[in-house]
Image (cartoon, rainbow, N blue to C red; front, side):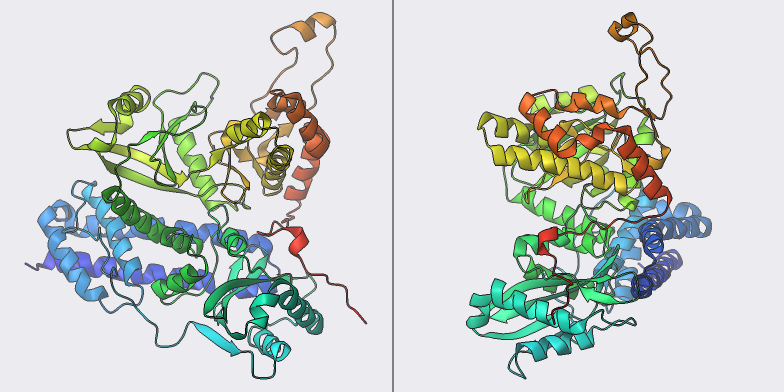
Length: 580
């Protein structure tokens, strides 16, 4: 039965959602201008503000309802009726799924997660089994026959021109034509019929991306054209990416979210999923800025996976953490991380500090080297999928977060993260099988990850191999955040010479150590596990042991320099030399 209270709840949530979407679109709409004007610092600030926007909007909605309705909002029957009324309001929206998720966020904040079912919230989306389409195509289609390949490419660049000129349009056309003829010769020869390009440009950090697909021989092949600003008021095509795995990396969970104009999110996701089907809908929603929708999609996919599988949860492979306990389901590519009740004595952090550092990573530029996470409260698992040994382990290290009943295991606070191969295990396998290429790749990637994080003003802190993972694409990614800090907060020092030999032999340092002091010379212990590892590290990244490297990085960050860390290899980049 609809009452004044239920109508008020539905109307208030609907209005706050509309305000949120308007603000979200406003922040996103400025991306083009920021790119054209090379306002790189502004881009990072707006990206963080847009992430904060969702939770700020939910908090404002909760505060308004609490002030207006007091105890009425805590009655389950009120929310059943409010859901029905809200459904009436959102049924014609083109971003229906986002509206559902916003309602869920408000409901969970106010109901204290007591009744998580489809009567009170949208556990299942109304979009399941149906599609929403915009009134217009979200992409432009170009036909090759009309004038040939170069003419088609010229029309494409004309349609996607910016308010700054192309640096050298003729050169870019030549580079693109050569790329297609050399890298997609078979496809081109088979009869490339048309090209679809999403109308909205994807902006992230210092690049803009044109995203589309090529139709050839009954197939749709993905491609991405990264566009850069040369810093002097002109744009150029930096490369073309057409391998599915390389396109997938551009949409990686280790990257910041894109700024892209999206009116019909589900239609957008369908197009992107046709390009990179290995990416889940959850990852794709997150990649275009709807990270809460990504969280909702993950949860739905996860409960569907549980219904269709039988394996048991287990402690994740690798060395057990000193701050987090981590478990996983072998058949599902995600790990679940819980803060322990007690930390190792070597860890000078609190639970609140750990939470804050995970939030920092969420808002920061991850430069392809830090894994995105999703935070959950009161996450429920079926008890039958947990062995008694796993339950005993969880309760022994995180009893305050784990509640076990006959039917469920409920965890009050956890994070989900993409499962990776721990770097220490990856290196051990390389050593065991004497795989020189794998070992070289691992150590090189490890050093590059540390350097790129430093250039983004992140000092990893605990840089042991066990705190890094290797993705399915072979990239080394940092995923243990309890000791990270801003690089600019660190005081990098050289270890002073001992005054006499006994000091050097002492088990305690003979010099004072401040709370933010870091001694790069000590990083040599990271590679002490094996002489082959140590030799490679010293050859490839020995500068990480030198305090001058870190001080120079601090100077660059403090000067406001934003480094170029693009999601493709340097070898892929086109030449900018102009031929006569």
